[in-house]
Image 1 (cartoon, rainbow, N blue to C red):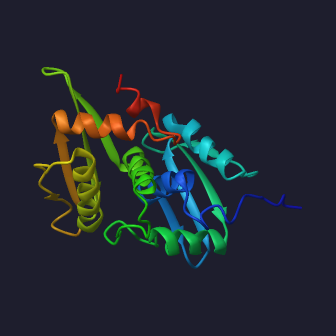
Image 2 (image 1 turned 180 degrees about the vertical axis):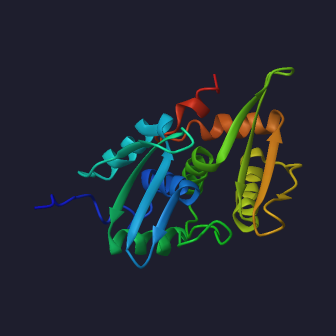
Image 3 (image 1 turned 180 degrees about the horizontal axis):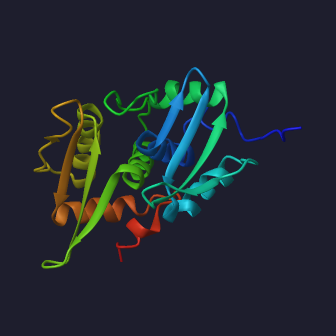
Length: 209
């Protein structure tokens, strides 16, 4: 008899600091399927502990699989079957199937929740860099034009100034873009976001000392 898997199905029902962080991470690195009512997260095995952290946050009793692809890359993944979970991710965060070119900003307005979502998204599909020559911190984010413009608006609010960051369209001019900021302003933003009390990938945020 197959063992039943349990987890907190209403985890994303009401936006809060923790679930906004994980929603941002899922918006970048998760996948939802309406027909199967399933959320799946598949990431590099080097971030296994981070996936384990999500599993603990949602009180998941199932298994996190670890395996090696034919190309030698090691991966880990977990599956969460729940109509409630999938519906709440769409209702509150606009996370839908085949979202790569369709993502729009989540339905949250509180600034601290927006910041938590952005931290999660950076952990999933962003990069934090150090410019060795000048010792400055920078970051970039890849997403849809709509979501990246939403991020930039919030970043300018944090900086209290305009950001000279132009969106570069990627993937053959489809609705996918990237922006990069490397200046004293980016360092101010990163130090601000690093204070948000959410899990965070230390291989990225550990660069901020």
